[in-house]
Structures are given as C-alpha cells and as structure tokens.
Amino acid sequence: MSRKIGDVILDLQNISLRFGGVKALTDISFNVREHEVRAIIGPNGAGKSSMLNVINGVYHPQDGKILFRGQERKKMEPHMAAVQGISRTFQNIALFKGMSVLDNIMTGRTLKMKSNLLMQALWIGPARNEEIEHRRKVEEVIDFLEIQHIRKTPVGRLPYGLQKRVDLGRALAMEPQILLLDEPMAGMNVEEKQDMCRFILDVNDQFGTTIVLIEHDMGVVMDISDRVVVLDYGKKIGDGMPDDVRSNPEVIKAYLGVGH
Amino acid sequence: MGFFIETLIGGLMAGMLYSLVALGFVLIFKASGVFNFAQGAMVLFAALAMARFSSWANAALGGDSLFLANLIAFVGAGMVMFIVAWVIERLVLRNLVNQEGATLLMATLGITYVLEGVGQTLFGSEIYNIDVGMPKDPVIMFESLFEGGILINKEDFIAALIAAILVGVLTLFFQKTPIGRALRAVADDHQAALSIGIPLNRIWVIVWCVAGVVALVAGIIWGSKLGVQFSLATVAMRALPVVILGGLTSVPGAIVGGLIIGVGEKLSEVYLGPYVGGGIEIWFAYMLALVFLLFRPQGLFGEKIIDRV
Image (cartoon, rainbow over all chains, first blue to last red; front, side):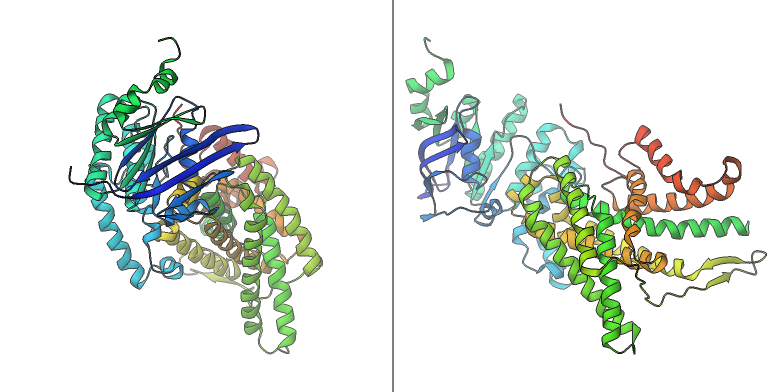
C-alpha cells in the first residue's frame, strides 16, 4: 500500500467515564496514528460506543486527558469536534430522512461554507458560486461511493445497506482528518459487508484519512485494521496488531467465555 | 354565481391568514421537532409590542407621520421578538436537547403562560388598536361579469397578499438555501446535525426568530382586524386544524390547509348552514381535522413516518 502511517494524531490518556454509579470506561489509554485504520472491538456493553462518543466530544470523561495533534483538548461543545476535523457515522443510522441523498451529503459541507449567513439566506453573489463548488465536491463523494443512481431519492426509502453508505458519504463530504465509524457493518449481509470494507479501505488509501472504527464482528476487523484495541466491561484488555490480539488469552476469554 | 365566487374569495382570504399562523407552527416543528404551543402567545406578544410601540412612537413624533411611527414600531417589535427567541433558546431549549417531544411540548406550554403574563405586565392589558393604515372600505369588482359585481374587502385582500408573499419567501428560504438545509437537518436529527458541525443553538435562535417575525406579521394583521387583546392568543387554536390538515412538516401544507379550511368554513356556513341551524364556521375546521386524523394522520403533505422495527 502507498500510504504510510504517521505520528500519533490522537492520544487518549487514562480516560474514565462514569454515568452516576455506572462505570462505562475505566482508566483507558491508547493512541491513534495518522493514516492508520484503528479498530476498537469488544463484546456488547464493553464501552465501545462510549469511547467513540468521548472522542467525538458528546461525552466528557471525568478523568483523563485527550490530546489532539499534541494539544490537550478541554471540555468542548459537540459540534466543535466537527470543526476540528473529526467526523463520524452512527450505529443506528442518523440520516436526515426527509431529504434526498444529495441534500444529506451536502449538509456535510456546512462547515466548509464561507459566505456569511445573510448571503446564504438571501442566496446571492458568492454564496451561489460557493454552492456550485460544494456541489462538485459532493458529486465526487457520490461517485466514489457508487450511489449516482439514487442521488435524488429520499433516504428514508433506501434499503439499509445503502443508507449506511449515505451516512458514510455525509461524513466524507466533511473531508475529515479522522473518521469515526460506529459499527459500520452492523446488520449487513455478506455482500454489503464486503462493499463497506472496500469503501473503508479505499477512503484510507486514497484520501489518507485516519479511521477509527468500532465493530464486534472480529473477523471483519482483523482483516482491515492496522491496530486493534480490545475493551471488555469498560477496561482495556488488549492492544496491538490484529494477530497479537487474536492470540491474547484475555481477549479469547472475553469473547468465548472461560473454559474453552 | 356571483355570490358563490364572493364567498369563495372571502374564504380564500380568510384562509391565507390561517396559513400565516399555521406557518409559525410548521417552521418551529420542522426545525426543532417541537410542537410550539406558544405560537398563539407569540402572536399576542408581538401584537402588543407593535401596538404600544406604535402609539409611543406616534406620540414622540407628535402625530405627524403614522407611517414612520409604524415603521419604527415594526423594527422595535421585530427586535423584541428576536430577544424573545434568544431567551427561549438560552433558558429553555438549550437544556432540553435530545429530549422527548412531549417534554418539549410541555416546555412550550410553560412558555405560553410566561409570554402572556410578561406581555401584559410590560404592555398593559387594555384593548389596543393597531392602525397600519389598512383601507377598511370594501370594493366591488367584476361588475361587468356578474350582476351586482363581487364585493371584496380591501383589508382582507391586502392582508392575504402580504401573507402570500411571506409564505413564498419562506418556502424558498427553506427549500433552496444552505441555511434552510441546515434547518431541515436539525429538524430530522439533533445528534447527526451536531456531528457534522451544525451549531444547534444558533439554528434554534434563527428559527424562533423567523417564527417570531411570522407571529409579528400575523399579530399586526389580526390585530388591526380584531383589536389587540387577550383573545388574540386563541387565534392560534384556529390554526391547529390547518396544521393537522396540511401536515406538521410541510410549508406548502400549511398554505393549502389554510386555504381549504378558510374556503370550507365560509362555503359550509353559507350553503349547509340553513339545514343544520348555522354556526358551522366555528366547528367545521375541527371536524375536518378529526376526519384527517382518522384517515390520514400525517396530513396532506406531511411525511409518513415508517420506522424500521
């Protein structure tokens, strides 16, 4: 592969997150390097989604530090993650159901719009030219994901696999530095899973986007990730290359139970 | 025939005014998923502000220019509605992100009482007039076509025209501009909108502002017709069936729903009234809404919600 893995872009140190008395994450540290595909795996309830939401700024951990490009991140508003170049997809698809595929992906360009609100509202001058520019970018994303034929379809009418793809498209339209994928393969059939894997690898390869993905399907993850973190009951039980993780006895125990 | 058309036109014009109030509901529902019970109170609040500012400005200008006084009052009332929107976002909505629809509905019910109370504390509770120089005299048109011509109330006509323009502008705003798209995005999914960097708080202030301006225009028109008083808040209740008919999520729906109900009320009153003893105008809209709720709950243009189970 042409891409090469760079320096640490995101560094999580001793993260702990509690909801009242429930410990969702306990003292978790790991890092993400630029241009790599980093997976977070673990059984149901392991804290994977909580971890993603911490990275994305939806949850604020009680303890621990998050360094993004070497700078410590203070408590932030959720939309600030997007401003910093972190985009995400959702486990339960969170598309804008009433809108067409095109409009959904166009919303991903919101932050790239430079003309001011008044101009956008009045739809004049630079705002208009800008829209055309963004539209071109969005068409590239549409071509990339091979969804030209459903461009104008309201997303509510699309089958599940395609909705997932549009969700990815919206995140890609932001031209993110880090792309967070929350169970991108959940609920898909084999063919859809293969397509999704291909798209994830292509994104990583062609745009150099750093990818952090959550999955509980071990098989898929091991094939496409560079490094894997394993969580169980909110604790980190493994971290390393897919092969190391696969042979880690604690991971095997967490996935298969004791006594096997 | 002439009389039928006269009734029809009267109905269409009344309907346009319903549409205007309904539009306020639809705007806020689309952008924040909140059924805004306070829309009626906002109409009252805006009308009160307008009426008082207008008379104060008029007094300050020595009664020379009613137009200038009204212009100042309009800008002033617009600013008041902006402040209202900002305060509502700051104190109420911001704390209720991602809550159930019912929670938000109850919150707007609370806003209703606060607005009604604060409005009357600030501006007093007498009955005021708004005089924006609307011509009150009716005109007779098409005398050559129909015997006796068609009687049209000029005031209604101008009001309907203003409403139509506002509705047109808002439709374009929602469907064609990037801001409109961001508004629709927020309406569909708060979490997802945040994840792509749409600043939820700012969007909500914008929407409530727009709804405030719509309430202001509705308040001026209704206020100049009926006088500004407490009962203006109940105008919103007249617009409820319109929203049910047209669909809560559709701007065109609010317009068509308003027209249907305006026309339906007038025609049924005139042509069915004699058989059932009159008074149809009062309940016709609600009956129609009930029928729609039974057979087409998403309204004429609303989005049918199909959930994956």
